[in-house]
Image (cartoon, rainbow, N blue to C red; front, side, top):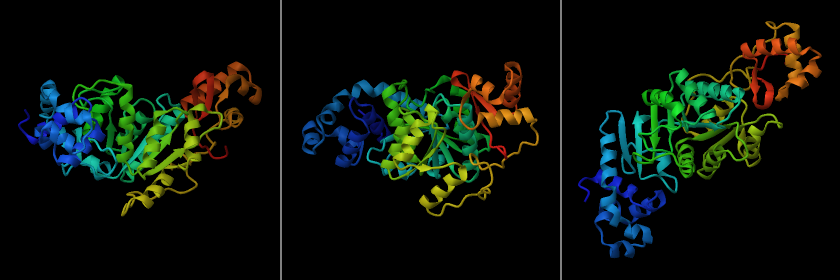
Length: 383
């Protein structure tokens, strides 16, 4: 038997077969989980609940240990369990068709109530993509938006780090229980996010990594945010699911384009063809959000249109480069290019080209890509 209202919520979401959709049908029928749990099976059936919801409370005893684990987790000062009837529950999330009845949050619960912008993309992102995500996030965070992402490697990590770099709030939405961080490499990042924002999940304590839970996480990222920006995504990237959920939820969906030869941006181009906004700068994202969010005014002025088209930061020139370095950048163009191709275009020997590429990589002007390719990362004037 459950003794408190919170225990009844935790019990309901742990019952076998009770997901977000069924949980919301239960709440519509009974108003609160306690009344549902105390009702007879005949009454549950009479109210039109599906068979799984009619019989699920038979397993109440089996979830008692899990409910106790949830409550122990919430004893920490920075750990919160937020139910759908809690005033701290984010209104944008409550308005979707399948809002999670319970949220498990570590950090600042107020972070969920501020205007959020999601930045998502490829796990195996290029250096250029990661840099774009980090700089977009920093710029948008400085403008007053909370950066939301999924704590995955690649673009997600860069987005969180970009917000933290300017001491801005960021929200990480996880597919696991609140006591588990995935991937393990991001444990330190998760700790930092807990201090400067929030980590949130709908999954109870102890829930392990399961592939099928990531689409559920993605719907939360899209629903919490006023808009979703996709930076690098292949045709089958999970980031596309987040963007399409944003469109379904009547949120803004935006994508950063890239080279037509780069497979990691094929998903971005597909999104643009499907109606997502093409954005080349953080300021363009702010323009879209300003139209969608009532009374939103950026804390910093939008930068000049002649600035860097990827980040809004001032463009640099080529005065610091020698003629051979300039020649290599011009030969490289703006698409990933192979070493042998550069040899032919720049008419250099392999040892000289290797030396120039190393200097340009150290200066941040180029980055190596998979397959032995290189790609420009900056918008130097004159290029």
